[in-house]
Image (cartoon, rainbow, N blue to C red; front, top):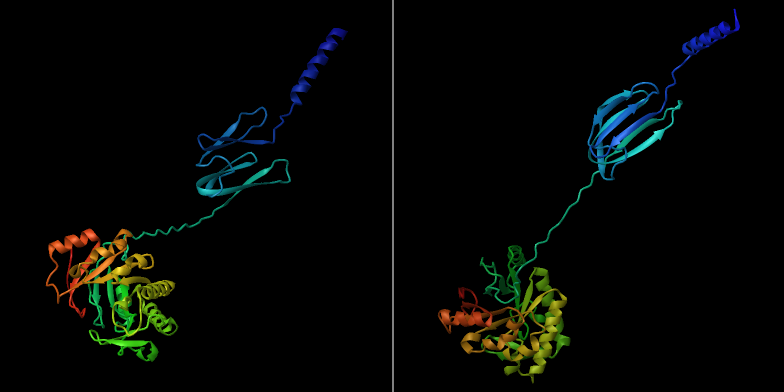
Length: 366
């Protein structure tokens, strides 16, 4: 064979050998493609020289990393392509952690674990009170007969400290009506259960109109502990406020040289003791002392101020937005006239008509 033909044969043989000895090389890696816009996770395996196969799982979450506070549910359907497993994940509110564990082959295996957490939030709303029983315009009732408290639709009910059962006070308070405990601060009443606590040296002349004795309001060393015990009883029974009667006895023939200054000092002491126990306190009558006491008291209670013509003296309480609760009595008038009620409205006074023993409330303005 000549040299040219030999070379041709060799070329043909080499070409055939190259064709029969070729092999396919497969890329072992698998790519995961995520569409963030549509929320679709796409998994594909692409061997070199072969067409690409794709598997798409429709989910509500695209990536394997999710916002804290969300929970995930693993779908039971999975698609396997090559060496990569794609798991469809449905999102509610979740947190997802992704870990990659190496295998014995060169192809990593990806697994997804989910953690679900839940929390409960409770909101408490407090509805503020829009009015106060101690503010101008409050309505009231006044019963000193003791025993059960009558059912009356008012803001405030004033009853006797000793003769009213604690169960009645609490019942009325639970109904939303504020209660006031009546006690006489400036006189001695021999029928009261603490009458034996009054030493003789603080007892003065008899007040014939009420069969009571005046007390020396200057002797707080002796009188003070008695009244403090009464205030404690007001609190124990569940009262909201206290009415100290007869704080202005300096006008009377008490048997002691009492002055207006003594009355002011005594009244302020009493108000301070009441407030220290969480009680509201009323100034009782004493129109000449209003300017000196309005800053220490929460509201006022008056008697006969329309019939006697001094209701206007209580104006500082109205100016301060504090209630003025007045009682007019049937031994002086038989009804509350429209003119009187109009005047009461102008002065900020809440009026009721009652018998002087306060067993019955007959009429109220408005």
